[in-house]
Amino acid sequence: MSHPVAVMATSTSRSTSQRMLSSSSNRLRRCRLRRCQRLIVSAGNSQHLQGASSGMRGVFRLQAASTDDFAVEPVKLLGGGVAEPAQPVYRGVYGNWVVTKEDETEVFLYRLGLNLAAGSFVAGTTAAALGANDVLDPLYAVGSAGFGLSLLLIHVYVTPLKRFVQLCWALGCAGSLYIAITQPEPVPIYVLEHPISVWAVGPLFAALTGVALKEGLCYGKAEAAGLFAVVPITLLGHLCGMPDGPKAAFLATWCALFAVFAGRKWTQEVKDDIGDKSIFVVRAMPPDEQAAIIAKADL
Image 1 (cartoon, one colour):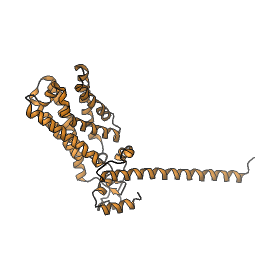
Image 2 (cartoon, one colour):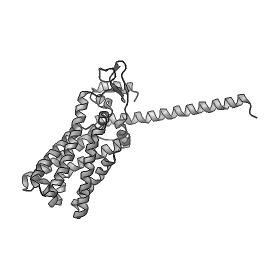
Image 3 (tube, rainbow, N blue to C red):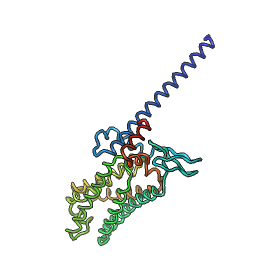
Image 4 (cartoon, rainbow, N blue to C red):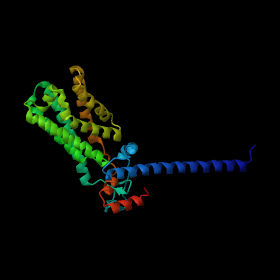
């Protein structure tokens, strides 16, 4: 029979070991998170992406990682100011932040742009199927402009990635404008009848694929992941001579996924489309202030 003192000593030793292991594991997770967060800021401030790929999974996971509380008494916010009583306060990497009216307006316009793009695409596809070609170019222009608005307001931690997607949009719009000026048919009809013209308009839809990738990875949305696959398959299939039957099926799937994707954006909390605002606040500061805050955060 074991002596009671020996049993208590063994139990205490095991409990102490478990606490030490748990503490060590927590410290390791915090260190990994901090390294990833530092990579986000440094990659966003630089003009290149050296080393960014190794932390990309963490970049996307951090998109909606903030936790929130309600201000019972004045809470100091990063960048100045205090939170109003009962106002949700979010704890970011570098400090506390709140959703402002300006943030709400930006998110509203971002979602509105996506819905304009999706609605125009679905309406244009339907009009083309019914032979109503006169409305195709106006719908194409509205959808492209709406999507451009969304790309202007989208929140992406790594600035060069955002600029690249915006460049793709601009190139696709330029190619579309060239077709509209030089050809008698509406742009969608010309692309349908001349598959090689996918090279002219393709960058615009490559930008859409990029947004679908970002939304799919950040929020785990099935429709965004589906859109990420269907858009390039449809365009490349058209370029390579895909039969009309499968092409029509892919196009219909594209319409359905795009409509669901844009519509479901309205069901998300505003903070989700902002991400960790403290990262953007710090990036907008002068370099010396950035260094001080990063040092204070022990990154």
